[in-house]
Length: 212
Image (cartoon, rainbow, N blue to C red):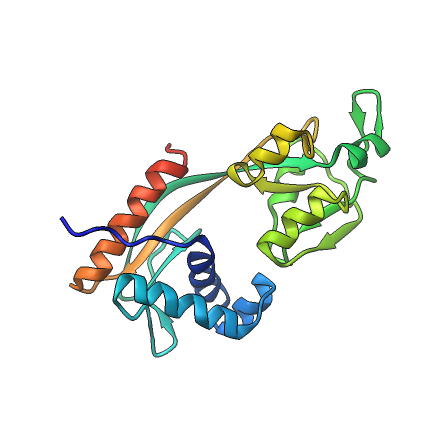
């Protein structure tokens, strides 16, 4: 059996951002990098799989939260990614009275204008509040902002495990995790390399995502 390609997280994030935003420039803005950097990541991913993934400005394969396939593609569920409500201990201490945290006053982070994960966590706890909010439109920048105490935010469980273990981040009391279902959309083309990429995505999803 041929060896499966190695998937770089930055490359797949770039592919996902282009699918969501519709252009290299918009994807670059969302990721907080240059359009050139996005282009380089896509070219590197295409070299890995030996197949052009963008055709006439359209993405041939992407991880997305959209369950409905676009024209010419098939969509399959991969599992759910767990996001955890976290904050720096110092930020939490400034807005806590005993075991109660003032979530209406404690600053909150958002990835971009489309990021509703924090609102979902608040509404799941029955809270209708409008805390001060900061934007950090980059994957690493969002993480660093939460760790620096600029605001609390929903972080990917695996992304924050070391910070939680080291005590640099702690759970926000009263808020539950949010599970986000992910789907793999790929063009229905009889291309061996694209089939191999789909197989690799499935195997990665089995290792990292939650089922059911």
